[in-house]
Picture 1 (tube, one colour):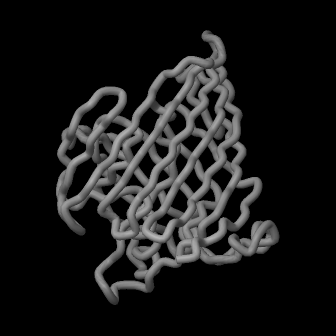
Picture 2 (tube, one colour; picture 1 turned 90 degrees about the vertical axis):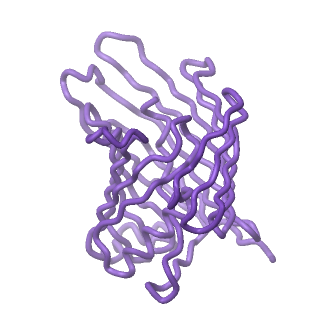
Length: 264
């Protein structure tokens, strides 16, 4: 499903000394979603909705909850309303991961996925076990990252001045397993004075990042979709553009607030 992976990108720590450790700021953000562009042959005439995103912290892990409501309008078909709720927990060592997603289309359940994944060690492979939509176990290749680890690694590569990285990432949003994610990281960007007035969380530098998500099939040359965003060094994604080729959805940040860190 095209809209299943509106989730933000994530990351694993670099080798010691390669770059300063990323200091993630737990936060809650609200975005407005709209149609950024559409090819004539796509049939898409409009898109509008909202997305709520929360990156939280526990003593031993990271929690992410993403909820969105998106209405797609078509030239020769009825509107489609998509409701999605995607909740995950990931250990801070990047080795354990739990995921739960439920998606409705026009009020009917279209997809429901739940399970957990484990890696044998940093840089090693592991397994993913799905409880829904059916019980199954799949192998994760060596070097697989989970989403929060991947975002942290993007930040650390940006801090190190790297411009291009490719990693295999498993997020549990579909049943296809780990996908190849290629990232292009632009030069460091200073805080935007106008945006910074919204919250101290936005008074941070960042990088313009473009991620290309390729399917698990290594013979496929074109990505399923691309995600462009301004990723700040505290883990906040200020604005995003999700490009499916035939059309693109823009997510514009409306509000953001700090989420309390745990007392560990």
